[in-house]
Image (cartoon, rainbow, N blue to C red):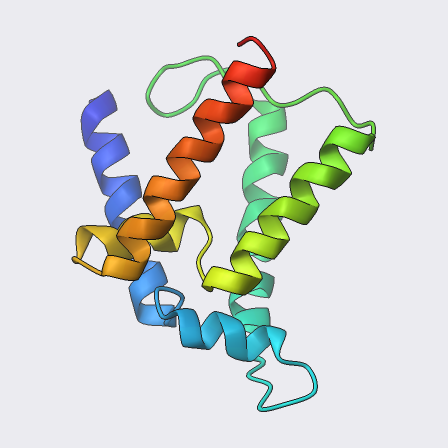
Length: 136
């Protein structure tokens, strides 16, 4: 059951990214081009995701178990520190330069996009460096 829920969740997420155009780096870069040919559609996708997330997190706070039966463990740390700001800045920089964030990059890489494959490889190297530098 757990694997089926994971599979269906991934399929719905991936299809949503494809349908909304978020697997196209030009769409993401168009959203970030505030003084050029600005494309606000990514903002609408984000607003929709936030709206769904608000209800999902509200429900998760009232439950102790997920549909899969696993325990729900929501983050408890709310502090904004230098690591969070630096990590968010690096994430935003990579997103703006490449036009990908991790979810759409994985979907695009699975479709054979060489740019996405390069992004995912760089992302994995960055994750490994993070863990190595922080001793995790």
